[in-house]
Amino acid sequence: MSPRHGFTTRSVHAGEAPDPTTGAHGVPIYQNATYAFHTYEQLEAARSGLAPHFFYARDGNPTVRCLEVKLADLEGAQAAVATATGMAAVSATLLHLLVGGGHLVASADVYAVTRAFLRDDLPCHGAAVTLVDVSDLAAVEEAITPATRAIYCEAFSNPALRVADLGALASLARRRNVKLVVDNTFLSPALCRPLEHGADVVIHSATKYLSGHGQILGGVVCGSRDIVAPIARTVSRLGGAMSAFAAWTLLAGVKTLPLRLREHSANAARLASLLADDPAVAAVHYPGLPTHPGHEVAKRLVGKGERFGGMLAFALRDPASVGPFLNALRLPTLAVSLGECGTLIWPVEGSDLIRLSVGIEDIADLEADFRQALAVLQPAVAAD
Image (cartoon, rainbow, N blue to C red; front, side, top):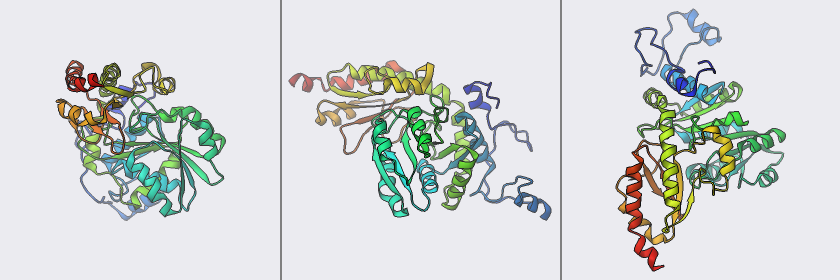
Protein backbone atom coordinates (compact mmCIF):
# COMPACT_ATOMS: atom_id res chain seq x y z
CA MET A 1 0.00 0.00 0.00
CA SER A 2 1.06 3.59 -0.52
CA PRO A 3 2.31 5.35 2.63
CA ARG A 4 -0.14 8.08 1.68
CA HIS A 5 -3.00 5.79 2.68
CA GLY A 6 -4.20 5.99 6.27
CA PHE A 7 -3.47 3.33 8.87
CA THR A 8 -7.03 1.98 8.90
CA THR A 9 -7.09 1.70 5.10
CA ARG A 10 -3.79 -0.19 5.18
CA SER A 11 -5.06 -2.46 7.97
CA VAL A 12 -7.81 -3.59 5.60
CA HIS A 13 -5.99 -3.70 2.26
CA ALA A 14 -2.23 -4.14 2.75
CA GLY A 15 -0.95 -7.55 1.65
CA GLU A 16 -4.30 -8.57 0.19
CA ALA A 17 -5.95 -8.77 -3.23
CA PRO A 18 -8.58 -11.01 -4.84
CA ASP A 19 -7.26 -14.54 -5.36
CA PRO A 20 -5.67 -14.63 -8.85
CA THR A 21 -6.98 -18.12 -9.61
CA THR A 22 -10.57 -18.00 -8.39
CA GLY A 23 -11.22 -14.30 -7.86
CA ALA A 24 -12.14 -15.01 -4.23
CA HIS A 25 -12.41 -11.78 -2.27
CA GLY A 26 -10.07 -12.39 0.61
CA VAL A 27 -6.91 -14.44 1.06
CA PRO A 28 -7.64 -18.20 0.98
CA ILE A 29 -6.24 -20.71 3.46
CA TYR A 30 -3.50 -22.52 1.57
CA GLN A 31 -3.66 -25.60 3.76
CA ASN A 32 -0.89 -27.71 2.25
CA ALA A 33 2.66 -28.71 3.11
CA THR A 34 4.48 -28.71 -0.23
CA TYR A 35 4.40 -26.82 -3.54
CA ALA A 36 4.70 -28.27 -7.04
CA PHE A 37 6.83 -27.15 -9.99
CA HIS A 38 5.66 -27.57 -13.58
CA THR A 39 9.13 -28.16 -14.98
CA TYR A 40 12.71 -28.73 -13.93
CA GLU A 41 13.57 -25.36 -15.45
CA GLN A 42 11.02 -23.64 -13.21
CA LEU A 43 12.57 -25.36 -10.19
CA GLU A 44 16.04 -24.22 -11.16
CA ALA A 45 14.81 -20.67 -11.67
CA ALA A 46 13.30 -20.71 -8.19
CA ARG A 47 16.48 -22.11 -6.66
CA SER A 48 18.53 -19.36 -8.28
CA GLY A 49 16.13 -16.67 -7.06
CA LEU A 50 15.09 -15.62 -10.57
CA ALA A 51 11.46 -16.69 -10.14
CA PRO A 52 10.05 -16.65 -6.58
CA HIS A 53 8.18 -19.80 -5.66
CA PHE A 54 7.10 -21.55 -2.47
CA PHE A 55 8.83 -24.83 -1.64
CA TYR A 56 7.69 -26.16 1.73
CA ALA A 57 5.30 -24.73 4.32
CA ARG A 58 7.92 -24.55 7.06
CA ASP A 59 9.77 -21.99 4.93
CA GLY A 60 6.77 -20.09 3.59
CA ASN A 61 3.07 -20.28 2.79
CA PRO A 62 0.97 -17.94 0.61
CA THR A 63 -1.53 -17.17 3.37
CA VAL A 64 1.24 -16.51 5.88
CA ARG A 65 3.11 -14.41 3.34
CA CYS A 66 0.12 -12.11 2.87
CA LEU A 67 -0.01 -11.59 6.64
CA GLU A 68 3.71 -10.82 6.75
CA VAL A 69 3.34 -8.19 4.03
CA LYS A 70 0.42 -6.60 5.89
CA LEU A 71 2.24 -6.46 9.24
CA ALA A 72 5.46 -5.14 7.72
CA ASP A 73 3.41 -2.39 6.09
CA LEU A 74 1.68 -1.47 9.34
CA GLU A 75 4.95 -1.36 11.31
CA GLY A 76 6.73 0.60 8.58
CA ALA A 77 9.23 -2.24 8.10
CA GLN A 78 10.88 -3.65 4.99
CA ALA A 79 10.11 -7.23 5.97
CA ALA A 80 8.39 -9.45 8.52
CA VAL A 81 8.34 -13.11 9.46
CA ALA A 82 5.36 -14.70 11.19
CA THR A 83 5.91 -17.36 13.84
CA ALA A 84 3.90 -20.02 15.62
CA THR A 85 3.82 -18.10 18.92
CA GLY A 86 5.05 -14.86 20.41
CA MET A 87 7.79 -16.75 22.23
CA ALA A 88 8.95 -18.23 18.92
CA ALA A 89 9.43 -14.65 17.72
CA VAL A 90 11.33 -13.68 20.87
CA SER A 91 13.54 -16.77 20.98
CA ALA A 92 14.39 -16.86 17.26
CA THR A 93 15.31 -13.17 17.27
CA LEU A 94 17.55 -13.36 20.31
CA LEU A 95 19.14 -16.68 19.33
CA HIS A 96 20.06 -15.13 15.98
CA LEU A 97 21.42 -11.90 17.45
CA LEU A 98 23.39 -13.76 20.13
CA VAL A 99 24.55 -16.72 18.03
CA GLY A 100 27.89 -18.05 19.28
CA GLY A 101 27.63 -16.10 22.53
CA GLY A 102 27.54 -12.40 23.13
CA HIS A 103 25.80 -10.23 25.68
CA LEU A 104 22.29 -8.83 25.94
CA VAL A 105 21.09 -5.89 28.04
CA ALA A 106 17.41 -6.44 28.77
CA SER A 107 14.63 -4.87 30.74
CA ALA A 108 14.14 -6.42 34.16
CA ASP A 109 10.39 -5.95 33.82
CA VAL A 110 9.20 -8.11 30.94
CA TYR A 111 6.71 -10.91 30.31
CA ALA A 112 7.42 -13.73 32.76
CA VAL A 113 8.11 -16.38 30.09
CA THR A 114 10.47 -14.02 28.26
CA ARG A 115 12.28 -13.35 31.53
CA ALA A 116 12.63 -17.10 32.12
CA PHE A 117 14.06 -17.49 28.60
CA LEU A 118 16.55 -14.70 29.26
CA ARG A 119 17.52 -16.09 32.65
CA ASP A 120 17.50 -19.84 32.04
CA ASP A 121 17.80 -20.58 28.32
CA LEU A 122 20.03 -17.99 26.68
CA PRO A 123 22.96 -18.78 29.02
CA CYS A 124 22.72 -22.42 27.90
CA HIS A 125 23.54 -21.15 24.40
CA GLY A 126 26.58 -19.25 25.60
CA ALA A 127 24.98 -15.83 25.87
CA ALA A 128 25.18 -13.54 28.87
CA VAL A 129 22.25 -11.35 29.97
CA THR A 130 22.17 -8.30 32.23
CA LEU A 131 18.75 -7.19 33.47
CA VAL A 132 18.31 -3.48 34.18
CA ASP A 133 15.66 -0.81 34.64
CA VAL A 134 15.50 0.48 31.07
CA SER A 135 13.96 3.76 32.23
CA ASP A 136 17.38 4.48 33.80
CA LEU A 137 19.48 5.28 30.71
CA ALA A 138 22.64 5.58 32.75
CA ALA A 139 22.12 2.04 34.07
CA VAL A 140 21.52 0.75 30.55
CA GLU A 141 24.71 2.33 29.24
CA GLU A 142 26.72 1.11 32.21
CA ALA A 143 25.52 -2.45 31.52
CA ILE A 144 26.76 -2.37 27.90
CA THR A 145 30.07 -4.17 27.39
CA PRO A 146 32.26 -4.78 24.32
CA ALA A 147 30.41 -8.10 23.96
CA THR A 148 26.93 -6.53 23.97
CA ARG A 149 24.97 -7.06 20.77
CA ALA A 150 21.50 -5.85 21.61
CA ILE A 151 19.18 -4.05 24.03
CA TYR A 152 15.79 -5.70 24.60
CA CYS A 153 12.70 -4.07 26.09
CA GLU A 154 8.93 -3.82 25.93
CA ALA A 155 7.43 -0.46 24.92
CA PHE A 156 4.96 -0.71 27.82
CA SER A 157 6.13 -3.47 30.13
CA ASN A 158 4.20 -6.57 31.11
CA PRO A 159 2.80 -6.49 33.77
CA ALA A 160 3.83 -3.26 35.53
CA LEU A 161 3.24 -0.84 32.59
CA ARG A 162 6.66 0.78 32.86
CA VAL A 163 7.41 2.96 29.82
CA ALA A 164 10.57 2.62 27.74
CA ASP A 165 11.92 5.80 26.16
CA LEU A 166 12.44 4.22 22.76
CA GLY A 167 13.97 7.31 21.18
CA ALA A 168 16.59 7.66 23.91
CA LEU A 169 17.32 3.91 23.90
CA ALA A 170 17.67 3.94 20.10
CA SER A 171 20.15 6.83 20.26
CA LEU A 172 22.16 4.97 22.88
CA ALA A 173 22.05 1.76 20.83
CA ARG A 174 23.31 3.52 17.70
CA ARG A 175 26.09 5.25 19.62
CA ARG A 176 27.23 1.94 21.13
CA ASN A 177 26.71 0.00 17.88
CA VAL A 178 24.14 -2.45 19.23
CA LYS A 179 20.63 -3.37 18.08
CA LEU A 180 17.46 -2.23 19.82
CA VAL A 181 14.76 -4.93 19.95
CA VAL A 182 11.30 -3.84 21.12
CA ASP A 183 8.34 -6.00 22.03
CA ASN A 184 5.36 -3.89 20.97
CA THR A 185 2.61 -6.32 22.02
CA PHE A 186 0.85 -4.02 24.52
CA LEU A 187 0.46 -1.12 22.07
CA SER A 188 0.40 -2.66 18.57
CA PRO A 189 1.24 -0.62 15.47
CA ALA A 190 -2.14 1.07 15.79
CA LEU A 191 -0.73 3.12 18.67
CA CYS A 192 3.07 2.95 18.43
CA ARG A 193 5.54 1.98 15.71
CA PRO A 194 8.94 1.50 17.37
CA LEU A 195 10.88 1.61 14.08
CA GLU A 196 9.80 5.25 13.77
CA HIS A 197 11.53 5.87 17.11
CA GLY A 198 14.76 4.24 15.96
CA ALA A 199 14.32 0.58 16.96
CA ASP A 200 15.95 -2.08 14.76
CA VAL A 201 13.56 -4.99 15.40
CA VAL A 202 9.92 -5.09 16.51
CA ILE A 203 8.33 -8.19 18.01
CA HIS A 204 4.69 -8.99 18.74
CA SER A 205 2.77 -11.77 20.33
CA ALA A 206 0.17 -11.78 17.56
CA THR A 207 -2.03 -13.83 19.87
CA LYS A 208 -2.97 -10.60 21.62
CA TYR A 209 -4.17 -7.35 19.99
CA LEU A 210 -3.27 -8.29 16.41
CA SER A 211 -5.69 -11.21 16.65
CA GLY A 212 -8.08 -9.55 19.08
CA HIS A 213 -10.28 -12.58 19.58
CA GLY A 214 -8.21 -15.07 21.57
CA GLN A 215 -8.58 -17.83 18.99
CA ILE A 216 -5.04 -18.54 17.82
CA LEU A 217 -1.39 -18.35 18.83
CA GLY A 218 1.12 -16.43 16.75
CA GLY A 219 4.03 -14.04 16.68
CA VAL A 220 5.78 -11.70 14.27
CA VAL A 221 9.19 -10.11 13.83
CA CYS A 222 9.50 -6.90 11.78
CA GLY A 223 12.57 -5.00 10.61
CA SER A 224 14.92 -4.51 7.70
CA ARG A 225 15.34 -7.29 5.14
CA ASP A 226 18.94 -7.81 6.29
CA ILE A 227 17.81 -8.46 9.86
CA VAL A 228 14.59 -10.38 9.19
CA ALA A 229 15.97 -12.84 6.59
CA PRO A 230 18.37 -14.66 8.95
CA ILE A 231 15.75 -14.61 11.73
CA ALA A 232 13.32 -16.25 9.29
CA ARG A 233 15.90 -18.99 8.65
CA THR A 234 16.21 -19.53 12.39
CA VAL A 235 12.41 -19.73 12.69
CA SER A 236 12.33 -22.36 9.95
CA ARG A 237 15.13 -24.47 11.39
CA LEU A 238 13.63 -24.40 14.87
CA GLY A 239 10.23 -25.41 13.47
CA GLY A 240 8.52 -22.19 14.54
CA ALA A 241 6.53 -21.44 11.39
CA MET A 242 3.01 -20.06 11.65
CA SER A 243 0.17 -22.21 10.31
CA ALA A 244 -1.94 -21.11 7.36
CA PHE A 245 -5.09 -21.19 9.47
CA ALA A 246 -3.57 -18.94 12.15
CA ALA A 247 -2.43 -16.48 9.47
CA TRP A 248 -5.88 -16.45 7.87
CA THR A 249 -7.50 -15.74 11.24
CA LEU A 250 -4.99 -12.97 11.90
CA LEU A 251 -5.63 -11.37 8.52
CA ALA A 252 -9.26 -11.00 9.57
CA GLY A 253 -8.37 -9.75 13.05
CA VAL A 254 -5.93 -7.08 11.92
CA LYS A 255 -8.58 -5.44 9.72
CA THR A 256 -10.32 -4.17 12.86
CA LEU A 257 -7.15 -3.44 14.87
CA PRO A 258 -7.37 0.38 14.82
CA LEU A 259 -11.08 0.34 15.60
CA ARG A 260 -10.62 -2.02 18.52
CA LEU A 261 -7.66 -0.11 19.97
CA ARG A 262 -9.72 3.07 20.08
CA GLU A 263 -12.29 1.35 22.28
CA HIS A 264 -9.71 -0.55 24.37
CA SER A 265 -7.88 2.72 25.04
CA ALA A 266 -10.96 4.76 25.86
CA ASN A 267 -12.32 2.10 28.22
CA ALA A 268 -8.97 1.57 29.95
CA ALA A 269 -8.59 5.30 30.57
CA ARG A 270 -12.02 5.42 32.22
CA LEU A 271 -11.38 2.36 34.40
CA ALA A 272 -7.93 3.62 35.39
CA SER A 273 -9.49 6.85 36.65
CA LEU A 274 -12.24 4.96 38.47
CA LEU A 275 -9.73 2.72 40.23
CA ALA A 276 -7.38 5.59 41.07
CA ASP A 277 -10.23 7.40 42.86
CA ASP A 278 -11.32 4.42 44.96
CA PRO A 279 -10.07 4.16 48.57
CA ALA A 280 -9.75 0.37 48.30
CA VAL A 281 -7.08 0.73 45.60
CA ALA A 282 -3.49 1.38 46.64
CA ALA A 283 -1.95 2.07 43.22
CA VAL A 284 -2.87 2.17 39.53
CA HIS A 285 -0.27 1.67 36.81
CA TYR A 286 -1.54 3.18 33.57
CA PRO A 287 0.68 5.39 31.39
CA GLY A 288 -2.32 7.45 30.34
CA LEU A 289 -2.70 8.86 33.86
CA PRO A 290 -0.84 12.17 34.34
CA THR A 291 0.44 10.80 37.67
CA HIS A 292 2.23 7.88 35.97
CA PRO A 293 6.03 8.45 36.04
CA GLY A 294 6.29 7.55 32.36
CA HIS A 295 3.35 9.65 31.20
CA GLU A 296 5.30 12.25 29.25
CA VAL A 297 7.44 9.62 27.50
CA ALA A 298 4.29 7.60 26.77
CA LYS A 299 2.72 10.65 25.09
CA ARG A 300 5.70 10.82 22.73
CA LEU A 301 5.34 7.14 21.87
CA VAL A 302 1.63 7.21 21.09
CA GLY A 303 1.58 10.62 19.41
CA LYS A 304 -1.17 13.18 19.04
CA GLY A 305 -4.00 10.68 19.43
CA GLU A 306 -2.92 10.07 23.03
CA ARG A 307 -4.45 6.62 23.18
CA PHE A 308 -2.50 4.58 25.70
CA GLY A 309 -3.81 1.09 25.03
CA GLY A 310 -6.07 -1.26 26.91
CA MET A 311 -3.65 -2.57 29.54
CA LEU A 312 -3.35 -1.47 33.13
CA ALA A 313 -2.32 -2.92 36.47
CA PHE A 314 -3.40 -2.04 39.98
CA ALA A 315 -2.97 -3.13 43.59
CA LEU A 316 -5.54 -3.25 46.35
CA ARG A 317 -4.76 -1.83 49.79
CA ASP A 318 -5.57 -5.13 51.46
CA PRO A 319 -3.95 -8.12 49.73
CA ALA A 320 -6.49 -10.38 51.42
CA SER A 321 -9.26 -8.67 49.47
CA VAL A 322 -7.99 -9.81 46.05
CA GLY A 323 -10.04 -13.01 46.11
CA PRO A 324 -13.34 -11.41 47.17
CA PHE A 325 -12.85 -8.62 44.63
CA LEU A 326 -12.15 -10.96 41.71
CA ASN A 327 -15.03 -13.22 42.69
CA ALA A 328 -17.41 -10.25 42.80
CA LEU A 329 -16.70 -9.15 39.23
CA ARG A 330 -19.23 -10.35 36.66
CA LEU A 331 -18.04 -9.11 33.26
CA PRO A 332 -14.26 -9.71 33.29
CA THR A 333 -13.03 -13.25 32.78
CA LEU A 334 -10.46 -14.54 35.26
CA ALA A 335 -7.97 -15.81 32.69
CA VAL A 336 -4.42 -15.30 31.54
CA SER A 337 -3.59 -13.61 28.20
CA LEU A 338 -4.69 -10.20 26.99
CA GLY A 339 -5.81 -8.14 24.00
CA GLU A 340 -9.17 -9.82 23.46
CA CYS A 341 -12.47 -8.06 22.81
CA GLY A 342 -13.66 -9.16 26.23
CA THR A 343 -12.08 -7.93 29.46
CA LEU A 344 -9.58 -10.31 31.07
CA ILE A 345 -8.23 -9.98 34.60
CA TRP A 346 -5.31 -11.80 36.18
CA PRO A 347 -3.57 -11.62 39.60
CA VAL A 348 0.17 -11.64 38.90
CA GLU A 349 1.86 -14.52 40.72
CA GLY A 350 4.45 -13.41 43.25
CA SER A 351 3.21 -9.81 43.16
CA ASP A 352 0.47 -7.61 44.58
CA LEU A 353 -0.44 -6.51 41.06
CA ILE A 354 -3.67 -7.35 39.30
CA ARG A 355 -3.28 -7.09 35.52
CA LEU A 356 -6.32 -5.89 33.62
CA SER A 357 -6.79 -6.25 29.86
CA VAL A 358 -9.73 -3.93 29.27
CA GLY A 359 -12.12 -5.06 26.55
CA ILE A 360 -14.47 -3.22 24.23
CA GLU A 361 -17.68 -3.73 26.22
CA ASP A 362 -19.89 -0.71 26.87
CA ILE A 363 -17.97 1.40 29.36
CA ALA A 364 -21.05 2.05 31.47
CA ASP A 365 -21.40 -1.70 32.05
CA LEU A 366 -17.71 -2.10 32.94
CA GLU A 367 -17.77 0.85 35.33
CA ALA A 368 -20.90 -0.42 37.06
CA ASP A 369 -19.36 -3.86 37.46
CA PHE A 370 -16.12 -2.53 38.93
CA ARG A 371 -17.99 -0.21 41.28
CA GLN A 372 -20.10 -3.03 42.69
CA ALA A 373 -17.04 -5.26 43.14
CA LEU A 374 -15.11 -2.48 44.88
CA ALA A 375 -18.15 -1.81 47.08
CA VAL A 376 -17.76 -5.34 48.46
CA LEU A 377 -14.43 -4.19 49.92
CA GLN A 378 -15.67 -0.95 51.48
CA PRO A 379 -16.42 -2.36 54.95
CA ALA A 380 -12.83 -3.61 55.19
CA VAL A 381 -11.49 -0.25 53.98
CA ALA A 382 -13.63 1.60 56.52
CA ALA A 383 -12.33 -0.65 59.29
CA ASP A 384 -8.76 0.33 58.41
